[in-house]
Image 1 (cartoon, rainbow, N blue to C red):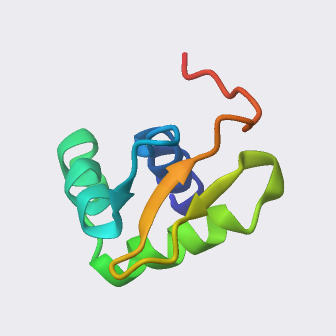
Image 2 (tube, rainbow, N blue to C red; image 1 turned 135 degrees about the vertical axis):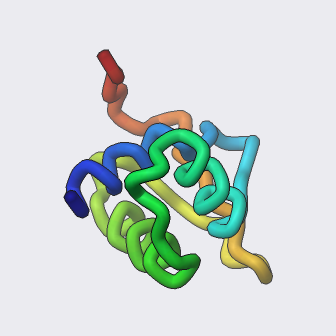
Length: 80
């Protein structure tokens, strides 16, 4: 279930220069997949986990609150 949620989160992130906060990702996740109704802290942990995977190129601007995005140089994953 966590892997499915991580994939869903990845596709909810916009490409840079657009950004979203973890709370916005949480709201989008609830709308897109009601089964993934998780707390904000879980979303933050998931985003940090995705950011640790270099191939996905997920990053944050380190602001307060942090704003998340996919780098334009990210490998292309295609949702089917």
